[in-house]
Image (cartoon, rainbow, N blue to C red; front, side, top):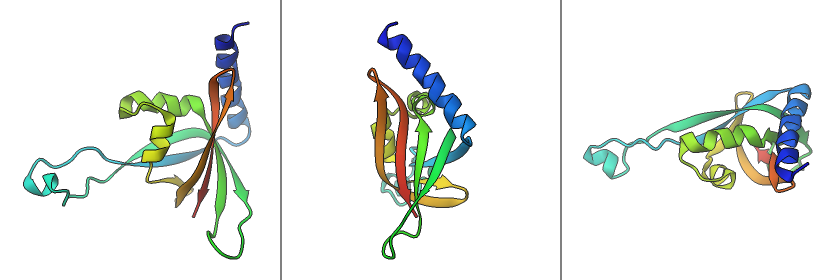
Length: 135
């Protein structure tokens, strides 16, 4: 079995596992790209707003926090296939670029700051992105 076939099978299995483990959803907040064409827009005086990119299925796991620092730290496991599906429509070349552009992550009505993103790979194919985010 070639690595491409193994990678595709692993991506399907990863999605099924995330759905079975809870299947939550998160939204990545990205800066909106549309700008007003008048002078205020050209000078950056108009808030272009944000784009809300929904990612599902997701598994969230609370992590311990210390007495100092963030009140909540959550590890989110996101399917690579859901991320890859969004990239062409957003005009973004890679998942790394998407996470770098994100203003934050919304989960259960709360806004989190993305702290760390780790890519889980098998045979050269990404199947999960593990995102640690803090509130």
